[in-house]
Length: 148
Image (cartoon, rainbow, N blue to C red; front, top):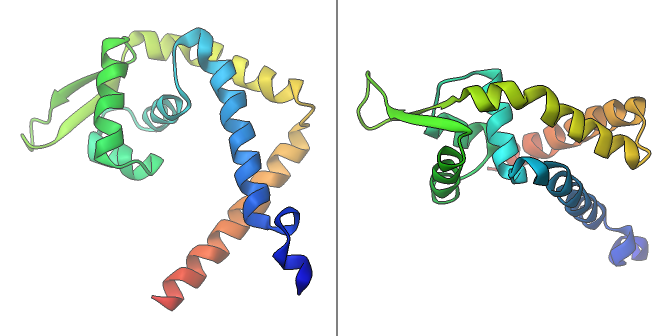
């Protein structure tokens, strides 16, 4: 039991530290594009489904409106996205990719891929870790829902 009480044996701390390192890695890789890591996540969400309501983007990337509003404003000012009122619901704002965002997809993906490869992370490790983290996340969500 004492093994679980030391900092270096805490899974949560290992995930926290690794997350911090990923944020730094992505920050450096995205710097030439004048994008932040959270802005990159918004671009990814829109690449999967362009023309999403801002609320839907927030749900996909797990960001609240207080964080998302200024981020979308900066992304609009920097030419990554456009925003317009929904024709169906005037309270809803629809966010869409610009040509700049569409045309930069390959270059951004390549920069991220190269940054990950420079770390020595092999593609099989990457996908194995994605699978394992997904499994752990799902178990934690299920447990939380069962306790609610």
